[in-house]
Image 1 (spheres, one colour):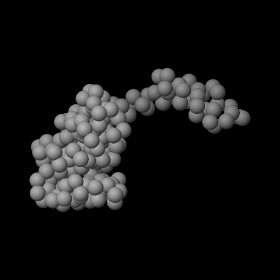
Image 2 (cartoon, one colour; image 1 turned 90 degrees about the vertical axis):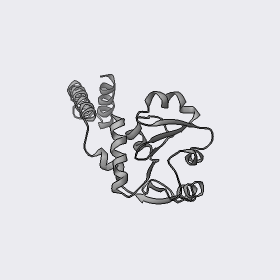
Image 3 (tube, one colour; image 1 turned 30 degrees about the vertical axis):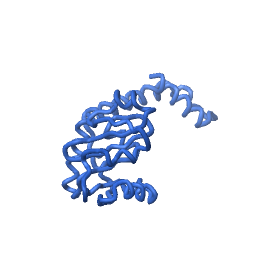
Image 4 (cartoon, one colour; image 1 turned 180 degrees about the horizontal axis):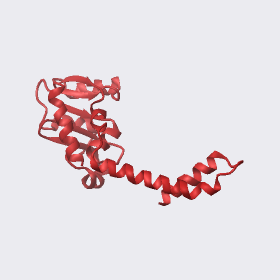
Length: 177
C-alpha cells in the first residue's frame, strides 16, 4: 500500500518541476511510509526514496516502513540529508510550505546550500483524496464498529443523562469491538 503511495508521490515531482520532495509533516510521513512513530522524514526522488529517523525508532521503522530505504540518523535527522545520494548541485527540493517553519527552512538551506528550495502545498493531500482499496476496507470496518457500538448503547440514552456519559460509553464499546 505505502509502496504505491511513494510511487504516486514520485510521479508528482515532474509535474511540479522538482528533483526531490521532502516530507516532514508527521501525518504525511505516516501516510506515505506506514511509520507510526513521532520522528521521521520521508525524502522522495524519481527513483529512490528514503526514510530518516533516530535510534529510538530503529526496530519500529524497520518493521513498519515500506517503499523507502530506512536510515537511522546518528545525529539530528537534517544533518543526514547531504549524505543521501540523491542530492547534487542545484537540486530542486520541494518542501511542505504549510508545515515547515522559517527556522526549519533556514536550517535546510544551511545544510544543503547549493539546493533550490521550492514551497509546495497540498501535494500529499492530493494523493490521499482518492482512497485505495485498503483505506476503503478500513473505513467500512470502522463504520461497522461504530454502528454496532451505537446499537449497544441505545438503551442508556434517556432524558437527563449527560452527553459526556453517552460519549464515554460509546467510545468504550467501540474500543472493545
